[in-house]
Length: 366
Image (cartoon, rainbow, N blue to C red; front, side, top):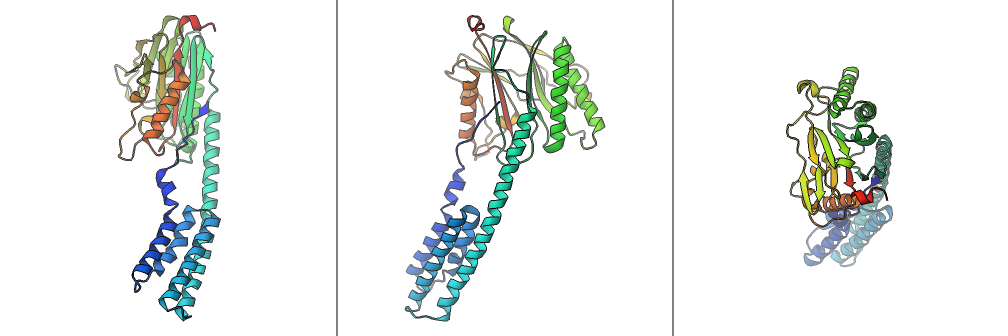
């Protein structure tokens, strides 16, 4: 599994680093332009603004610059005569700078703790997901996982693939919620899918087997309620027949990318997510699709399509996948995620993606 890095820093964070210098410059300009103006509040704000935005050294430097400017401007206002006001103002600014330095250390420690927590959460999340083969029976496989920028809790994104006597079976899903309950649900879904996919001949029975395990978990765990569920897509692939069967349980529809076109594989009959199957009846609708050689199946969690831009517009992956793309699942996912991070400043939810390319028959033996 590859973690897709979001390399573009937030524009608002980059520009905010110049705010202390802007405030200091504004204070100097106002004082020089209007002799009677009191710019001390602006000077006092400089180190306080710098504390959460800059490093310790730059916070201290900002405070020192504000102190120096305050002394020069105060002397100018008094005709370069030493008065109590000239003494009190820099002393006050020194005290505020010391307070800003202390706050900066607190902010830095909190950021480091949050960064460590995110890294641990993502490591646990990645450890939960099974290792995916790069190639199996005429299929080339790629995965990407990206943790949310604002979440430190372990998410519920999951995927798995098993080569079975009944076809290659694939699962991608998203557990509602975060933290320990989500981890428990992920583990239950993956383990039950592993057992059912290898031993049950019909895809509908596989879905029912996982549904039963999720229902039993909810009955057993007091911290799981009727609002806890798992959206998922179960797929069954027959490479030798270029055939794909799919059961969608309330999950975003996968995309089939081929020859510059994108086809959304919407289910003919909608179904409720796993964990709510008792409200939906025993039937498990399974749709069937032709899968031409060279086409790539793209499956993803809702962290991708629910990403918004600054105007609140949701991300649509289809345009990024329309056009000339190599029949390579890794390149297809990279094209989609590059477009995603052009669309949004940061992810609000974890995002996982799985792509599978069906090789032409001549390439399956290479």
